[in-house]
Length: 97
Image 1 (tube, rainbow, N blue to C red):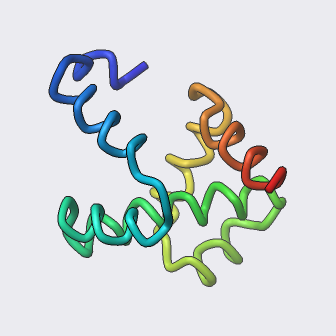
Image 2 (cartoon, rainbow, N blue to C red; image 1 turned 30 degrees about the vertical axis):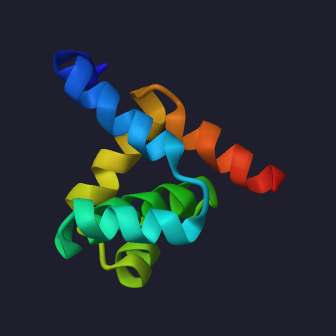
Image 3 (cartoon, one colour; image 1 turned 45 degrees about the horizontal axis):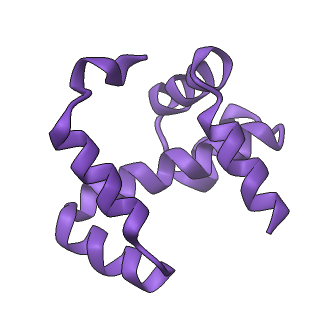
């Protein structure tokens, strides 16, 4: 896990704050205060790319529809293949809703 190097109270506090959010509107408010527009765009774009990869879209389609670079698409695809399966876990939970 890449994040292991950052593990500690500071990151725990951030994750606890995120887990304390109760609605989408609270997420909008918190992340608006927490992140820059570019950071939010990058995070949401990665999630979109992951969903499109899981749906079987081609790199060309993903690049065109998401605006993501091929480097970003490759990074997300590599994470889907060799990461912690967190994208998959989240997508499965979203499908259950």
